Structure formats: C-alpha cells, structure tokens
Length: 246
Image 1 (cartoon, rainbow, N blue to C red):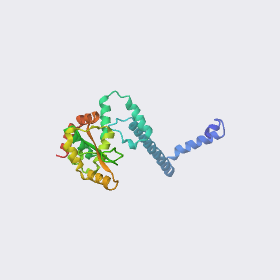
Image 2: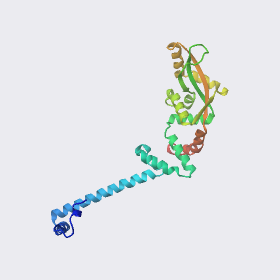
Image 3: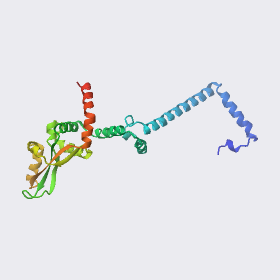
Image 4: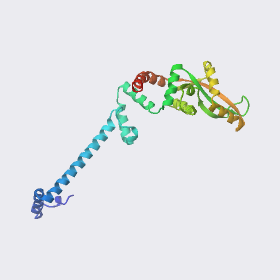
C-alpha cells in the first residue's frame, strides 16, 4: 500500500500533498527544475518506446512465417515450441513441404550436393564397408571403414577423403537409401577398391591388425524424400545459380 493511500482526504497532510503537486506542475517554469522534469519525462518516454519495440519483436518472431523468422538458435526454446504449435495447425501441405526442404538443405554442404546430382543422373551408386576377418573368407569381426563410395570421386568432391562421412550423413537425413549390391556397378566397385583411402584401410588390416580385409558391397539410390526434394527444387535452383554465376 502506498503512503498516499494511508492519508485520509480530510487529513492535515492533504493540503500539503496538494501543494506539492501544484509546485511540481509549476516547476517546469523554473529554469533548472523545468529542464530536469522535461529530461526525466523524455527518458521515460524513450524507455517505454524501447520496451514496446522489444515486446512487439518477441510477439512477431514467435508467430512469424517460418520463411521469414529468425534462426532457431536465436530463439528461446519456449518461443520455438510456440511457433511450431502455431504452424502445426496449418492446412497448407506446400508450406509444410517447403519448410521440410529448408530444414534438410540447411544441413548439407556443397560436396553433398555434388553427390546427389551424380546419383540423380545415374540412378544408383556404390556403397561399401571394409571389415576385418580373422580367417580368409571368414565372418567379419569388426568394420574398419563404413559407407565408402565411388560417387565422391565421380562427383569431384573437394574433400574426397570425407566421402564416407558425406554418405553416412545423407543416409541419416533420409535422402538416400541403401540396398544390396548391384551387378551393373561392377566397374564402379573396382574403381572404389583402387581408391587410395580404401587401399590404406585394407593395408592397415593386413599389416597392423594381422587380419584379412573383407569388402561388403551395397548400392545406394535416392530415397523418396531425396527424389522429391531434387525434383521440386533443383531445376529452379539451377536457373537461379546460373543468373548469379553465369
């Protein structure tokens, strides 16, 4: 409870309180006091304006269109969830598809785009794991290299030694699917086994581990998600890229 509320209207202090209000109103006509009052009011106005801007920005950001919203990492978790809850009620499948594509593409690097382009053109590519066996032709006891592929060399990726990581990431994102070995890729499998990085792993199995290298052959294709993303985005993206870098 404030001090004013505790003073009855008929209290002797009431005239004094009224005199103080009157003195404050008249103080603006005094050179120094009036200047102080105006400066105080201006500062309060600026503070209120800044507070309103911040509150408006918070409200706009939490409910903004995902195509225009700030990056997720810039938002508090409760605002991220609030935005998702609002967009959850959307009945626009095209908007949902665009947001999914944006999320996926935001996790890719140019080398992976090169791999997807080659895979889209040829339809199927190699995927091999290199394991170690204690006996010739025996079972694999452990894997020393996973997700090696000749697609990296064919696509001309800049970091060729990281092709296995690129392939693993594409598999995790659901953009490519792995299946059994494809007989049509026999020449590509041979090309992969001649890759210096693959040869180094196989030599290490023989020399350091004193085992026998085993090659587990598979094949990869674009997944339904990967095929849809490439079909819906690549033609327009290629046209935009040509305009930017003729």
